Structure formats: structure tokens, C-alpha cells
Length: 103
Image 1 (cartoon, rainbow, N blue to C red):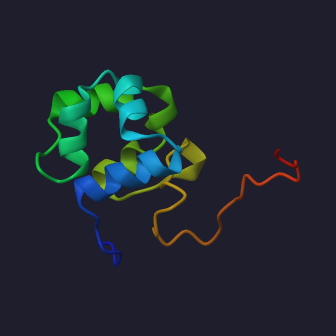
Image 2 (image 1 turned 90 degrees about the vertical axis):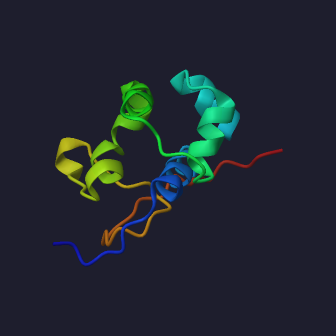
Image 3 (image 1 turned 135 degrees about the vertical axis):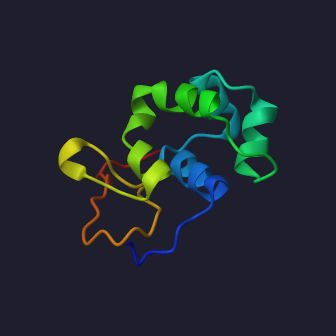
């Protein structure tokens, strides 16, 4: 039994998208899901179907979140993580910052 609060499907989808720095439109295009349908999932208006979930996690870039999304479990050794923005009780996070100047 986990002592962490489980997030809703909509909240998890938003965290995954934000962690990947994608817009809803970009994520819909990446996964092949209809934009309006995907937006409904993320807004909590509709639950994602099993078929849509298969399309979503078929994208290699998103697979690392599958166990967290479905089971609230992570296994970093197996490549299964929580989004960087999620509070999943991870003791360490890594930052992708660089010293490069922009502009």
C-alpha cells in the first residue's frame, strides 16, 4: 500500500506533457490522438480509453511514465520514472540545466 496521494488521470497526463515540455497540440500529434479528445482527457471531461492509452504509451518518449501512470509505481532501474514535476516521493531529481547563454 502506498502512502502517496494518487493523482487523477487528467493530472497525470498534464504532468507528463509538462515534463516533456509539449503543448497539448504537440502531444496529440506525437501520439496520433485527436487534439479535442486528448484535451478532454487532460481536462478530466473524459477518461482515456485503453486503446488511447496504448497509442499514448506506444510513443517511446512517453513509455518511461507508463508504470507511474497506471500503477503509481516507479522503477528507475527498469526505466520507469515519474514526471520531473510530480511529487512521487523520489529522493533525488536531476536537472537538465546547462551553462549555455541564450540570445
